[in-house]
Image (cartoon, rainbow, N blue to C red):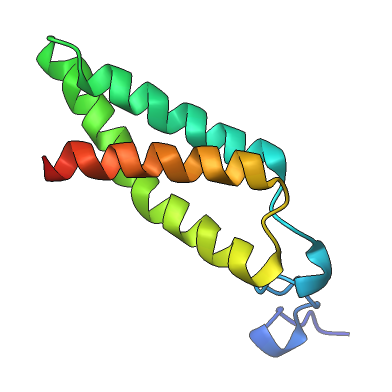
Length: 101
């Protein structure tokens, strides 16, 4: 019997990349992690050393779209902890003000 090479139509099933709405609301640890990372970015971007400041700004630039995406997911699936979501929104506002002012 000849060996048959695996092809795309013979591969097994894989998990879907789409999230199931039954997954539940956004976890509180997600909100706390985002808030902590934004505060860390604000602290680092306020330092005098050029490399540390650049690292803080880079962190903040990467976190803004991620945070907006998490808020979008929270609108669909539920916010989980309202207080933690509010803290993240406050940190996002501080970051936006830092870049705008």
